[in-house]
Length: 188
Image 1 (cartoon, rainbow, N blue to C red):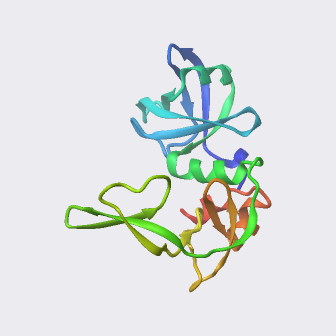
Image 2: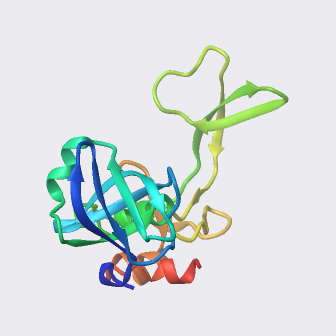
């Protein structure tokens, strides 16, 4: 799947803090839904849908940053995704990312109490006063695309990109190398 095969948002007007227009199909459309619209140069503009009229096939897109409206032109059609698929599409299409094959190894984690249990997280910066260091406690990662486990027990080799993103080797070859959005079809 490519950007050209995605549902679209067709801009008819720019009004204040929003772009107003119509949608090509109802997939991923709903009032206040998180959405992204892909504009020139594979730039992802994030925002929310508003004024959704399912029967009339119209909506408004309110970008998170009002100055992003400069990327929209009346009469143009733009690929549109929801928040979930949009995050993954942005990851796959970001040619500035530098992916490297990497062997996963457990790292220390911090554990802290929460109501009725505990929470474990990677150590990033100072350890909270109520936190306890767990040696090698962060023992796996998940592929950002298919959620496969990358660990010494399951599959220790994955593709890594700064600051902290992992994909399995299969998804890297299937989606990132060819910049394919085929995972959207796989996931529906």
